[in-house]
Image 1 (cartoon, rainbow, N blue to C red):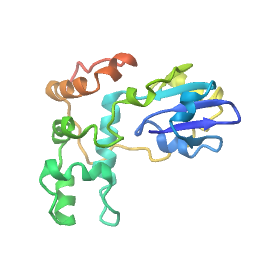
Image 2: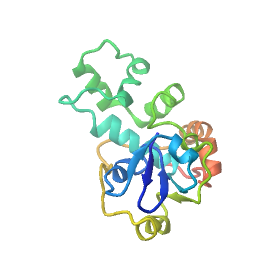
Image 3: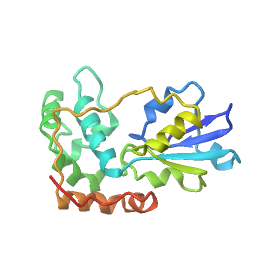
Length: 200
């Protein structure tokens, strides 16, 4: 899982995939390091977290939408869906069509089977085990994003790999939210994200 070191400013920044990972990877002063480095260091540690609902929506639109491309190899974040969707032995053309037709409901209902099979879907709290942060920063909080820019001196104008809304339609209902709430229960509680109460 991604941990970054700013050797110049003496701090570590830890986050999860689908939580500004590509943006941080492009920062001049950040270097990706092994998890053991922040664990053993006395440098300040900062975490970036994201609302679990938003993180899943981004994954669905990105890995199961935008990144489904016949000119690329299949990603591990896509391969974990082959078996649940019954397309392991299908042609690439069939697989692509299945992904195009895959609904958000299908994605969420399959989630309990494979959320631990790919790092983009892991609960966020797992990356931070054993680390004590100086501050937890929320991706949705403008004040926290200003802190990254002004205090940690990061270039927040970099918008690498941002996932825009596309043809993949997203509709939540209580059953789908309950599935997500159970899987990411610790993320909701530890980082004070509210459970969804209104639906499409």
